[in-house]
Amino acid sequence: MSEPLKLHHVGIVVQELEEAIERYCLLGLKETERGIVEKFDVAVSMIPAGNVKLELMQPLGEGNVQKFLEKRGEGLHHLAFEVKNIEATLAALKSQGVQLIDEVPRPGFGGHRVAFLHPMSFSGLLVELVEAED
Image (cartoon, rainbow, N blue to C red; front, side, top):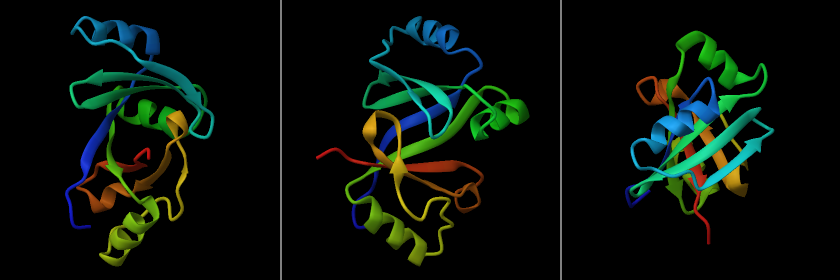
């Protein structure tokens, strides 16, 4: 990868989505998107904050996000970076020894193709790659 990646969003796990949205609105922020990502079993709210978005995630079932909430409580879940070609980026990172959770991109919120990188490769922080829209 020759150019630095752009931060796309910050993923934050919340217990109650509506309450969390209200708290962030107190900062003058406004929700612009909302939906459900069935693959991850979460309800999602996207809130722009300058050049980056906050992705609030409320677990809807017993998936990984619910396990995260039970173990660590509300808070930072992941950082997501925008990439132009997700397959090429995954291949380049893998060749440099980065542990991948997803070898192949999967559908994420808003129809984006996404892939996750293992926290062991990034000081304990889960990293998501989001393919840029054309």
